[in-house]
Length: 250
Image (cartoon, rainbow, N blue to C red):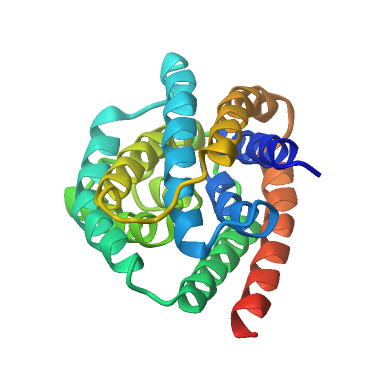
């Protein structure tokens, strides 16, 4: 199968998940780039940041138009993640590739577990006042993951925004996209001076398909129940994590 078709198919899946769930799709971008398109782990994490930035910004626009973004909360959360994202992105370029792959597999496994076990939010819950210290602490942790592994971290941002900061699910999904966009841009800036080769013949169609998929993902979320989407995606993600961990240990 040609590189173009593989890139388009993988990008569509990533965009659908990101648009529907507010995160998680980027966790599939790295393994898709490695195992389908032949990228090295280092090149895949850098390319993933390009894809995630463009796709998240597109999905953010659609959610903002619907009034589902809490800009003040998201800005505080994202700002706290910028320094860790910059530091972690620099560190990632110096880590052996098997270690990077194993770390990514563990993170993908954690994402799947969170999706399986996350309780459905109560529809009548009221947002709680945001505590700056909590928002900053959670944002810093998320920025580290984004910078090191090249993932947006929405699979951690959404449950954190719901359970720790008290946002409703729709607002958490929209706000997480703001956080992902900012952190991904910061991590990408830190890698700008590296000599990691970027294969634009694969990255460009992958990104284009992901951007279009993000639009469809938002519409899909309105038609299919959130728990059903999460369980399906978590099953795929858990399988990918297991395969990556096996590969890293060999």
